[in-house]
Amino acid sequence: MWGPLMQMNRRAFLAGTLAAAASTTAVLRAPRAAAAPGRIPLTRDSRRVVVIGSGFGGGVTALRLARAGVPVLVLERGIRWPTGPNAHTFPGITSLDERASWMNSGLFFDLPTPSRRFTGLLERVQGSGMAIMCAAGVGGGSLVYQGMSLQPSAEVFAATFPAGLDYAHLDRVYYPRVARMLGLATAPDELIRSAPYAAARLFARNARAAGYRVEKVPMPIDWSYALRELHGEMRPSYTNGDCALGVNNGGKHTVDVTYLARAEATGLVEVAPLHQVVDIARDGDAWTVRVERIDTGGVVQEVKLITARTLVLAAGSANTTRLLVRAAGRGQIDDLPDGLGSGWGSNGDQIYTWTDLTESFGAPQGGPVIYSSKDWSDPAKATTVIQASVPPLPGNDRTTMLVGYGVSSGRGVFRYDARQDEALLDFPGDADAGVAGRIHERLTRIAGPASLLLNTSTLDTTTWHPLGGACMGPVCDLDGRVHGQRGLYVLDGALMPGTTAACNPSMTIAAIAERALDNLVRHDVDSVI
Image 1 (cartoon, rainbow, N blue to C red):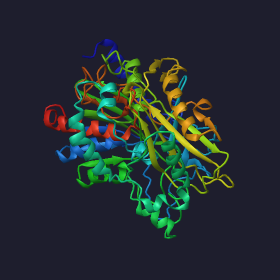
Image 2 (image 1 turned 45 degrees about the vertical axis):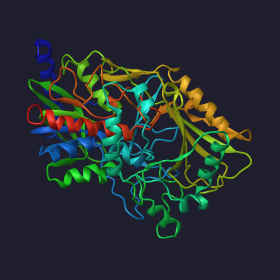
Image 3 (image 1 turned 180 degrees about the horizontal axis):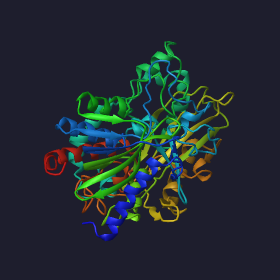
Image 4 (image 1 turned 60 degrees about the vertical axis):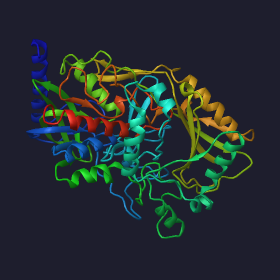
């Protein structure tokens, strides 16, 4: 129940909303939106289910609830990014513009921030000891991830996830379901033999020579698009490696064209782009979501107060955790679990450049990713390394990219800072030292003595795979129900235990969400949802 303090804070929450609606100079947390000139309209709405975020967790939730007959509103702060042959939807790495950055929040590797504010693809969330790259747009992280869709082994999964998760059931039912939804496929040999994929071939050769096993990586890609590029039928997007910030030609099976497209086709799901969630609060037996509808320049056009019987947080690890920690810190949700904000991990991300002094990787380099090499013999120390294309840079045929991730026990914590009115990450500087050392040792052996390796993570400590913050166990049950908070769910990377078992997270987040939704449809629909 709400005590007197909670009642006061709820009134403050509503008063803040009304003030923002009436004011022409509302003060918002950076890099939040600016206010439009004149009076900003305030509207109220009531929905059965609100989902915040449209990535893997949000997409799975929307589709499975809709198929159970439940209407769903999906709130997404970013825009839609439609693709197609020869489209110019996404920015290129060598020609970055405002499309790359969410509201001038900064990029990576000290790349210049575009001068014009725009609801771009990436928000840089800076913490102490680590920066997090967060996606924005309908489809979430699937828009900008390379697409590596790896499934952990039973042994590595058991070493990192709670015992109550039945890996055999996930392996039999849910991982295959996700693979079908995403249309996973490995690159055809015809493509790998072509000139743009020399770097992939050299990585595979060197890894095998160093005694490591090499496998093709399942990807959510229709590889016929890349073959058509080779044959001159489309402008290059895959075959020149310029696909790190989205694939313009299409053929990449992102969440917006898979889960969300099918969800919207039911007629029960509304996806609302350019709706930035500002705050969440408990209101008796319901949830109140304060939303700013913005334009692509970030200017607030409308403030909405939406009440819902059920609230699903799927805004990604950083933003889901920040919303919850801030709501707890401001007294807008009482009695959230003590473990909230803790258990946050980087998945052990390490990003390298590999310069070979004797052999050419070719230019341009085809992408996104062809091969991986796993060392999972010790589940507690498992690592995976891959080669990824670098964007088309004139005159550079000796450098490519290597990426590693793995099991790490290093964890950070999000805490509420009342002075900044924000949830801030504190990540120890040496938290990933063990996994970083193991990855470096492997990559040194693969690159060989006539090479130069640069770990860019030592220059700009970032992760593209943030995990945890509202972890299963201390904060949520295995189906994402937040302990002690009826109708509140977490179904995204925040639910993971700071790692996804030496794999990039997408497959495991989606598989665990699929499992959870089967259980929620069976047990919670009509009674809670």
